[in-house]
Image (cartoon, rainbow, N blue to C red):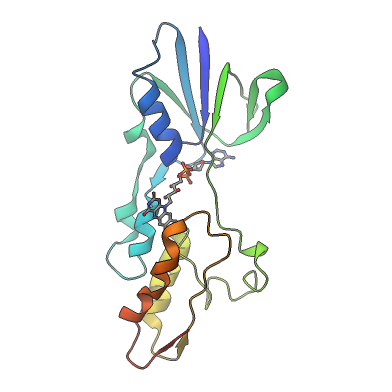
Length: 182
Ligand SMILES: Cc1cc2nc3c(=O)[nH]c(=O)nc-3n(C[C@H](O)[C@H](O)[C@H](O)COP(=O)(O)OP(=O)(O)OC[C@H]3O[C@@H](n4cnc5c(N)ncnc54)[C@H](O)[C@@H]3O)c2cc1C
């Protein structure tokens, strides 16, 4: 029996196992997918949380709803990939051997890599909408905002959402009249 292991059950990993399970005979291939989080987050929906179109619950669904029959789903943190041994180590000591490995562990915001963003103001007066926590904090901040100056910045390395640049103008629609938007 050959073994396909997929690391990460986000958008990419989930699509891959849904596409490959019908194509790989269950007599020849096992498919295992690993993720540390029980919930799937619909990231494009984060954009609509700060402006009240979506609530956080609208973008969260159990990952298991999207894993097809015939795929083993392991909820665990991936600790180490050992390509020289065709092996993955999970936290807690489980080892997974593979014949074919797909790594789909995604990206996450790294404010510490942009000078200034890692300040204590991050999450208070400086916000992003690249995570559920960030989008929710921004929604709360916009609710509290009574006027003043708002500034939108696009990080040079916006790999997580290349389409983000035209969207930084959106706050204009929801900020109090007279707010200066830079
Ligand atoms: C605001 C916003 C708007 C967007 N709009 C669009 C759009 O309009 N169109 C579009 O095509 N794309 C859009 N995107 C981008 C799209 O959502 C992402 O490209 C996509 O979700 C990435 O999928 P992924 O599977 O690579 O990563 P993710 O969906 O992030 O999945 C990675 C998974 O790996 C798991 N993981 C990571 N490390 C470990 C570990 N060590 N152990 C176990 N599990 C681990 C995580 O828990 C996660 O479930 C948007 C993104 C954002 C934030």
